[in-house]
Each structure stands twice: as C-alpha cells, then as structure tokens.
Image (tube, rainbow over all chains, first blue to last red; front, side):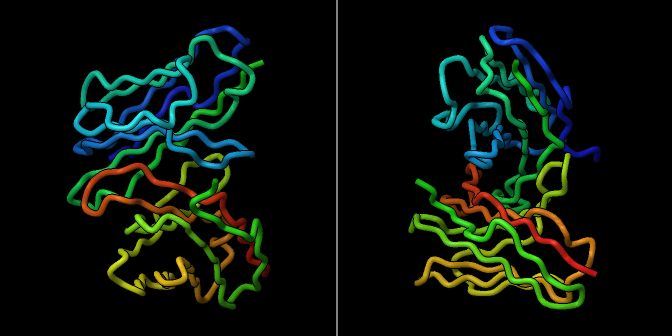
Length: 115
Length: 114
C-alpha cells in the first residue's frame, strides 16, 4: 500500500485566500484524523471521522476551518479565509479498528505558509 | 493545559548506550499510550504502544514502561543506533478498543552520537 497520501506537500498563499488540503487514507482504514503541528502548540487534533462521519470537531480552531469526507478514500480540510497564524504543518492520519484502533498511520504532511 | 508532557526537549546519547525518553500525563481517562518517531519533512511513524492493563511492552530494541500510579511512561531504546536520531512523540488515547484522536506531547529530540 502507498500509505496515507496528502496533497499538496507545500502550499504558499496570501492572507484572505481559500486553502484546500487533501488526504487519501490507507485503503480499508475506516477512521481518518486531521492534525496540525506548530512550534507553540505541538501536534493537535483538529477533527476525526469514523466511517466518513465527523465524530469530534472540537479541535477545529474557528469557523474558518471546515473538513469533509465525501467517501472512504478522500477527505479535505478547507481554510477560508486563511490567516498568517494558520501557517503550520497539517497531517492526515488513518487507522483500522482490528489493527488496534489507536495506532494511526500518518501522511507526510502539508506545509502551509500564509503570508 | 497540557495533558501529555515531555519535559526534555532534547536528549543526547552515545551510540550503543541506552536511551530513555520520559513522558507524563495528567488525564486519568487515558488508557492507551503510544510512541511515535518523526524524521524531518516526514509524518510521525508508529513505534510501540502499551495498554493501561500492562506495565511493560517490548519490541526488539524498544521497550515501553507504564507506571499508572505515577501517570508516567518511558521508552527505552537499547542499544541506541545512529538511525534512532529523530524526534520522539508520546501520545495517549482515552477510548479503549475504539478510534479516538490522540493527544500528543511536544516531543523529545533524540541525538545519537557516534
């Protein structure tokens, strides 16, 4: 398997623009997680899905952030409008319950820079 | 309020010696603990885990110890190798047997010196 795939790997945008990050989980995994890593706060959970349904979005910082999972093989994280403080590395992870639901497999991340 | 704490931002160990990375947690609901390893420009990679019903789990050179009464866990790497140089994250989860988001510590940068 190719592992968790994220695109783009790097994104540079101007303040106020819309940003869409994409994730393809490992085939057969039914849970998907979005995390954000910053120097100040470390790795934080933003939102996660089970069977394409959002379960907990309490980590989403503001209404500017939204996430969707239209099917089992694709998820998006959208920021609209983007702000400089959104600059971070965004990771997507997936897991499979029979493999130990807590063992999540991470993608390579998307480094977002908002100027 | 940090629920998972790694108080050592960095640790330097000689090759061949034992590396001990520490982690403390405050949430009594956590029942599953994991260690992840991260190289620059890559995502975290799962290393080893332990359930709260155990106090030790071993996998090759890696052993994780859990002290529930002290809310403390540690990762032992022996012998340490140059390829072990990376950032190590401690993580915890509160739902046994079900998918749940992980709460991470801020990481410890392990440097293995030749």
